[in-house]
Length: 425
Ligand code: GDP
Ligand code: IMO
Ligand code: MG
Figure 1 (cartoon, rainbow, N blue to C red):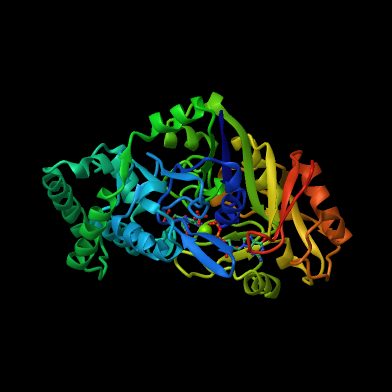
Figure 2: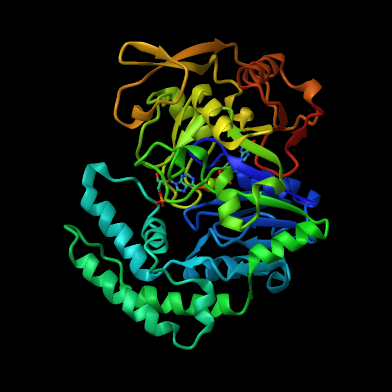
């Protein structure tokens, strides 16, 4: 049948995991197409709160298959921990989860390179999650990487040792090293490799294309957000993969003409974790209040997320480069009782007003121009129908819709899968 995409439109942590989980009953297959354990996708249902890193967020739906696509990078140690964490849910996971043979593997030394590189950058560090993502994608594009399909061959450890030796040489050149213990990391790594081997390792591009021919519905789940995209994000403060819709084609091997809906998920405000520009950041009590009420702490690293107002210049840019066909607004409940709400509608840069996302966003001072909205005081977390939402929130949503010219078809009012209002638009 076809493929739908679900993407984060800001700097990650928009609530992708929640929405994938909530809409999975509409799909036969959920497939992750890029990123790795730098992602932390939170799902809440029936009193459970669970964070997934590599495993797609459709895993809790009984009827759907879940695929880790070729564009993903897998840390075997983290994968094993994730699998163990899911045991209590009795999910028949070895049958439900399929892994692409072409996905690349994060080695212990990739994590050490990541940490050493960041430590050596000092103040200029990216703020990486230190999961070895960048170095693994570097080895992929450098044509040195180890793929999931390799680990079933008996001589793969030889390849591992050669790459490890090369990495150790590289690590010795860094100004700063880390206290990560390679022996310990390797122990966990090889336990994880054993675990990966126990799964169905497949040519996922054939599986997905054949499934489409058979009339199955597939949801491609993005990780991170468009503003962290390696090409279109706030370079160099980005991740190392294409987080945008084009990344779904290369990360799954599914052609563009099979894509139908492209769902963009964004928060009613903005957050960012790690370094890099953030024009609408609130370094004041309002920012702190948003962090506090929204529990804005990293799902993977526990770091404080930086908080700020919604940036419609950035949102419009993300919508354009992804071809977004519908929007989902998350976490408006966090803005209840915050007072007046500002939304960025243009930037001032070099004394000029601009309404596009500029190349020099990482290097020049940018001042946002805001439109100010009346806030609301009602608690909206138990509201089930749009008609019961405060009129100020509806005005806010209507303005965003008309500014970006894409319908907002879902309003999330809390972290639980049931705190979701679907709109008939
Ligand atoms: P992801 O990486 O895009 O999947 O998002 P994260 O899981 O990293 O961060 C989103 C956080 O917001 C998680 O703690 C979710 O449980 C929570 N969340 C998702 N939607 C809502 C919402 O509408 N309201 C509130 N208050 N929390 C939400
Ligand atoms: P999800 O899927 C938020 C950020 C890091 C850092 C930069 C590079 O949960 O939305 P990396 O480890 O990729 O080299 O880090 O990207 N980052 C994320 N921020 N959510 C994520 O994933 C992120 N994955 C990476 O904080 O600034
Ligand atoms: Mg996250």
